[in-house]
Image (cartoon, rainbow, N blue to C red; front, side):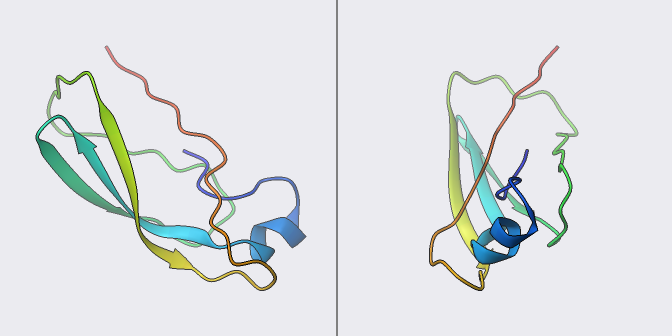
Length: 80
């Protein structure tokens, strides 16, 4: 997951960045906290999850220095 603007350092710090997300898959939810670092972040579940839906809710942000919007650049889902 790239939970921030990756264009350059100005945009990274200028935009809000998620500090916490709530991931809901089917009937189960998890809160995931993110460090404020310019790196890709992976979430691995400890057990299998079967679902047809994924809901992502922003639970908290690191405040940006220039704009009051929150950036999630990309979300990828891998499965076996």
